[in-house]
Length: 174
Image (cartoon, rainbow, N blue to C red; front, top):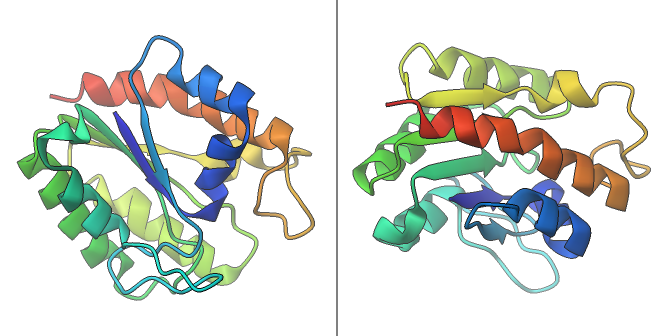
């Protein structure tokens, strides 16, 4: 499987124990970058501009794997996010993914609620899309830095652990 994410998901790649937890029994490619956006050009951070999530998915080709996890959306508005989901879904399925796990955003700002609505309603169009409701699961947990979004080491482990059952569910989404 491949995880495509922004700086929140990148926390997993910074914490070896979280990586090990996510990878246990699975082959996982982590592709999480600071400032990544879904389909609109990504923002720059420290002189570097990452690919979009769509470009990252397209760039993997058949090596994408059976399951794609998408954890992107904190660096953009909700406008057009639903159409972006459709573009990423088409690309992932065309490259052989059998299921996609889409992680909801932690709702610290109103736009994240609108993005989450776009994620949740996308399941009506995409039966192979599984929603992992991180917003609900993480509510009230002490896993976050001062901004309420970026994860502590414990939070990175919690996210990795949280994602595992959704990966198995998506793998059965045929």
